[in-house]
Image 1: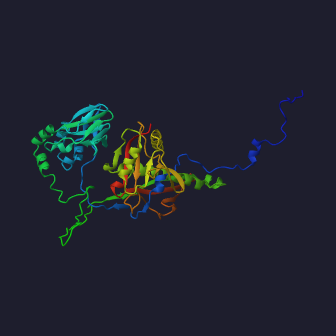
Image 2: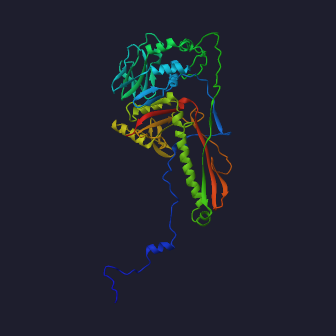
Length: 463
């Protein structure tokens, strides 16, 4: 029986493309990886060569000011202050009697405040210390022309009123008002005095707590340098000296390492047109660089989020990052601010706030590219800044460079078997399964030379 060709099916007259591809060399890309980002932080940090594996930051002597944040523990809805954390209060900053601190911690009472509720009012007797366990509080003061202004935004771990525990007849010179649901722990002056009456150690400490500070200090807590200015004639000039910290901080280089394994069969037979070993190394080093930037932001030892001074941390006034918040952030690093780093979603949230106010920030040029800026300071995206499950992130502002007493990166170049500056690739041998191993190593760290080189805007809502 003879087969017939349907009128709709035309006979094939030439070689098909599917078959032709078997004899053709395809045009292909190098291996791609979605994890690679712009890594702006690594680009803008000035990198300092560290010999010996550690970098010592010598500073002028500073005295503790005791304005740290308080840590709490909670059991269900019941919140307690950790007794040792009470030493963060300036009044108790050198007191270390655990039993007395435990007694004081037990005298705090928990209070809940609704948004808009006043916690303390200006002009009323100041007779308590307030610890903010959760929520945000506006510290309101009267301006020079009689208008009410937000002097400060307090949040989790902040406190106020500790001086009222030892000062007679004090009155509040500000109003504290909750702007979100707040939980606070309150210790009255009367309860404090009851504990002091039972503790000779606490009474003795309060009477003599200033004797250790024999030198005057400046606004930054540094030992004052005595000077004379504006004098006429032959006057006796003051003598002075600049004291240094006896135990300066040292930053040790951190390390990121991995062992890259490649089968000899792949390295021998599949190296055209691209070298398999080079491509494996390239992507491995890209992953190491991404981890390096993550550690520079989030490492608890040297990461920027954890090494920002407590006095350099501020909170948003309403939630989303507004132009007012960004101005307050730049005021923290006002000595030649260099860069602002934020998560891309935080940058988008700031853009929305600007749009809602009819403000259109100008861009600036950085390395030949246009980037968004605020007050002329570039705003750079950094996806390593975390975003919490509640949609809250942080924004960093910093000054950079040793000459500016800013933030610097630390690394070590000139390593044995250096593949790229600061990256070494060492051949480790071939095992009995014909697998080649390479040890890939990267050393790095970061240092904040003076506290006001880095500022953090916290509690940034990006939703």
